[in-house]
Image (cartoon, rainbow, N blue to C red; front, side, top):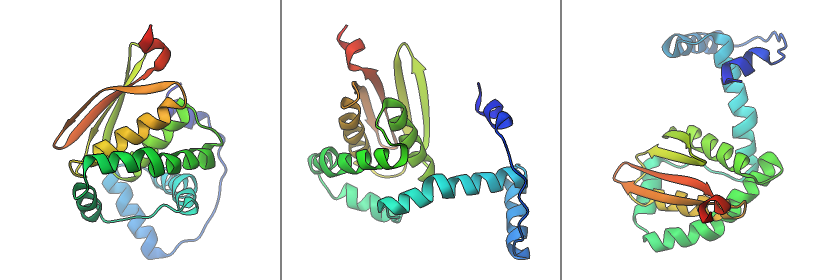
Length: 186
């Protein structure tokens, strides 16, 4: 079932609300800009608020300017970043998975990872092929951010019987594959 089919089959409720005229105008402008209906836009906004922003705030996540984040990571050594990613970063990721989903599995790891990238406006693709999942990411977060991501993801994935292979890095992007530990040893 595709995402579009899933949305069509979802039960919906009619809700009538009153909003400020200026806000209404801004929402309509955004609809025109994004070429989507007002209903779709409002559902996206509400879904992001309820399923992401509220939970992130409850978990203690903070927002930071991209340039500050990039400079902080790029001023640290790769080894230091990998150490943070495999300790504190991994614990935070696991706590987030338990808080958001109530469990840690390959599916919840990938879903939270996808939501994080979307909330950061990071371009990415997930491609499934021959039992592996390849993730390709384009970003502007500096040379060291990929090491944080790959180390953190690999540590969490190991707990559910998966690992990262074929990680590759360049100036504005990186990629890696996720495989089952069992399949990789076969």
